[in-house]
Image 1 (cartoon, rainbow, N blue to C red):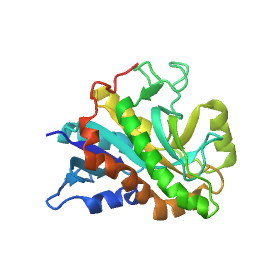
Image 2 (cartoon, rainbow, N blue to C red):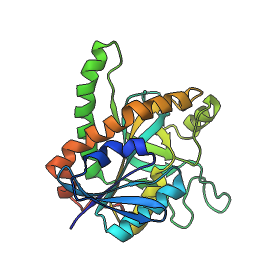
Image 3 (tube, rainbow, N blue to C red):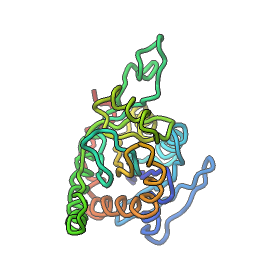
Length: 260
């Protein structure tokens, strides 16, 4: 039976998904993590809290692939906006991910993953397109109410996501990343590590992030408020239609993690 893994770094990011699982779901405790196996809106899934950071995300991805034989992995949660066009409340769907803090010079080029010969890991284009389309419908529905309240219409972006083991919350750190990685749309702490594991196992993957802050001095406050009040709504609202329709299981699987 095909299953999809849905991972998040914080409980609030997956709380509504866990609450919506159909009766009969089972919980498996492996490596200090709970893996919830069951059916979510008609689609067989494994939902897990990875915890924060690259090592935690990589370990969790390895477990869902090896222990539960999932057919694809989706990571969801919050991120700090980097690109000038990306604002709080927007959604970013990754086309590729890279580790901004990987630096094994002079043995390898900056950002290159040693012995793999690559900097970026490309997401599954078909799954990413489904996430983009669903996110666009979701943000348009929410955006209509936001505009009436005088807020900005949320946008959906597709592009590069940067990952590192640091919570970027200072203007100078954010500016340094923007200068070094002008194509990066946002920054987070798990995606590229999960992507590397999926790439090495040949399992398709996708990453969707909601922008909670601008990776600046206000990031801690903005992130906390967004996490408590918005993160779970976006995650469930965007994924529910795809799971109900079975689209994530029926998507063309030929677009694998070993592109490029």
